[in-house]
Image (cartoon, rainbow, N blue to C red; front, side):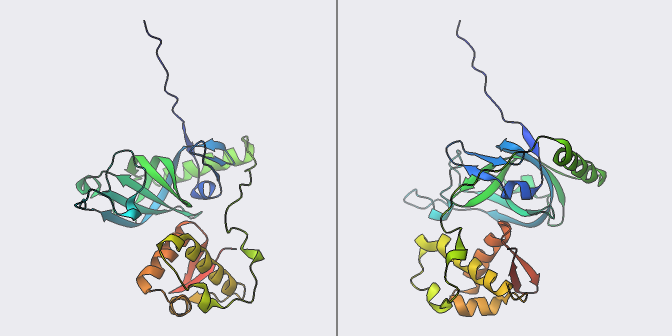
Length: 253
């Protein structure tokens, strides 16, 4: 008789979004190391800020668009995206291989309880929901926050290891910058660098406490409004910048 093999399922760790964003990514283990230790699966409560259905028709050559080339495991590029906010941070929930009708009941402004797996693609962290349901009782939010606070005060906490990341130490960049030249020769292969430069530009203006307007960012970066907003949205989701006023952006650091 063959010995049965037990599948190790990581438990869902109750946390806030900030704990995910502050965690160090362990690429060799496809996991994150947070103040609660190693996590792969989380449970959180958050508000839906935005909802998108992304349905892609297969190309004739059978290839997917490069922007959808994420390892989903199911070979499907159709997906539903929810931008989530729990007041500590923002993260995107991505569900692959979806039937849009299955998620028609979820609307912007709904509060949802999510259990899901954390994913990493390039420098971008998202959550793939396994369980998604609306929160009808506001007392559940209070209870969940109380449980997290109790663990923060009395539970075993861990120090997050520092992992070297490319371009993270932007303080070493000279303060005398020709912003017009920062965005020359931009192409698809440099998207991460462009996003980092946009962050640096916003952070530089934030030191004066005034932030920078969308129009001024457009002028300095020479990007289209559509492309610029995609970069800004990613930076907001990564909790690096925020919109302090209508079309005014500031950096958290």
